Length: 292
Image (cartoon, rainbow, N blue to C red):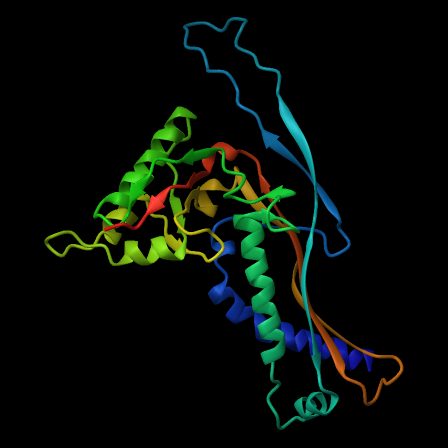
């Protein structure tokens, strides 16, 4: 039975991964680094520290040397999981060669795991919903554009992005050399995508151009009136990543008391942690409004 359930689980994995890739937003925001498996409980990584300015002269001289300063950080790797139960007779029917394997239960559980991963990456790890043990991109952002900005007016969201760029400039972040993703709370996103000026010109193409080739995303994880500006994974992987020690995986087992007729217990799980190596490249937009 154990081999049958193992093969059944791998079939489920093959079924759930393609649709998960379609809906998963968080993995479009950060570089994914593959870890060493489920047994890895923590990971060491280096948080970048700022160096002094370079010198300009006609000859080399002393005085332009920095002692490499870094913060060695160790993060515990949390697990995300969702359990479910499959009726044994239904499971046996699914094993019938003439019946396509129904992965609905596993996929529903996988969607819940994916949603929790998005919360972990964007907001952080919090067991009480308030205090974040490991900050996500929003909670861990080194910059905050907190000026009240009305995105209900054409150009409002662009003003907020430029305001964030100004903060980045102060921290010597190369805003013109990076591509940027803009993640918005639903009430802000829905307003932005319908924004037009008096001539009927849509604002979204102008916003996309302002992001240097990045994308605009919507996330229910963010609170109303908020957004996040972050470098795209291909241009910002040196600044932050998601360390994925265990990819989304399904597991199935039985109750040893009733191994033949008892239900099949299912679990979808993954393990990973966000690593912010330079928080100054992240800017939250904490005071957006939609007042027309």
